[in-house]
Length: 428
Image (cartoon, rainbow, N blue to C red; front, side):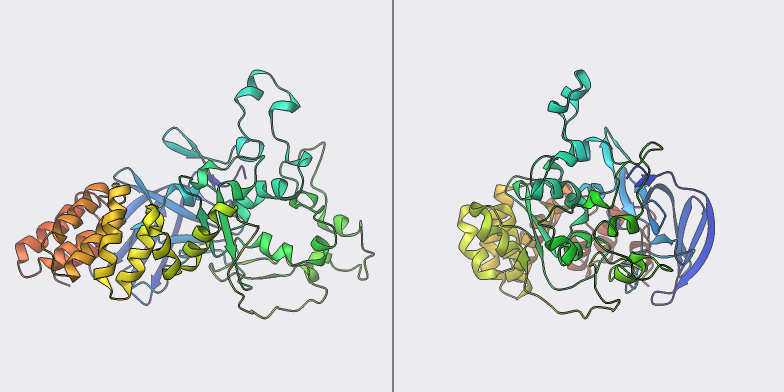
């Protein structure tokens, strides 16, 4: 965890993305993308990931962090496109990195991000620093069950979706409580992703037969020292099992690495299997990882599943997430007239939600309501990087080339090297 983020080391590399025809280049700590005679280059200001499997990189544009389309893959010893960029026809430095994305890689210190600190696993440390005592700090080793596991699951359990409770954010979790006091995680199927350790481990007989006594720290020492070095994984297995093959490792067969669905890398499958065979993917119904607090069951389930009927039923309570999702689903289904009052209410109860203002503009435009352009402007005012709002506003003014270009140039004030907008201004 102490290596979860860090400084960017100089490197040199070139590669081409066939789908978009974009040429990518790493020159020292500068990442560049060139397409159709235009080039965008940004200094990578933060390395995300230890580099043991790979690293992604953050660039800063107008004071905000964006993911570089270039990542490092250690297992292949080369730079390549970052996960999710492969199908894009216009890859660019335009994927924002929000706080909730970085929480599992870094800790916020004033206006900068640093490696994960002690408080992430041990709780608030103000009292402990003033008067060190076992009674005023959380020691996960003394916890059990869901409270103990939640310390690790805050980052190692992503599931299919995570739904914060009303008024909560992912940063509100504190060691010593369960995840379900802040959010509900929904899981399903047998998706094998970078962050599916907890789901896979929960399927293992080693875990289920132990009565949940086998927590993550049985195998993983979070902070080894010379006095207490890391204990080998095989040694842990031999606490219960007699080895039947001495020339190989237990994990090599029973926790084999396999390719994750969301990145170009192989990760350890934490589903301990009796036979060394690849599992078949069997879709499962979406379900809560642990019981949801009763007062949030209907809301969390509706948001996780995108259940329109339940969302519409819950909408009168004025929950901004419920209103925004219900309105968005109706809009996607071509039911703008039904979406309109929900989106109007969404911006009333949370006026700084730029995406809700943008969708309200889409609904009004679909219904021929003249104020739609003002809604796009409201979205842009609240998030100057919300490109979709600029694009919709520019398209609405496409009959007037000067007005069209004016909208796009406003976006370039914040992201002057954006390739997509510069291409549009050239008429490509």
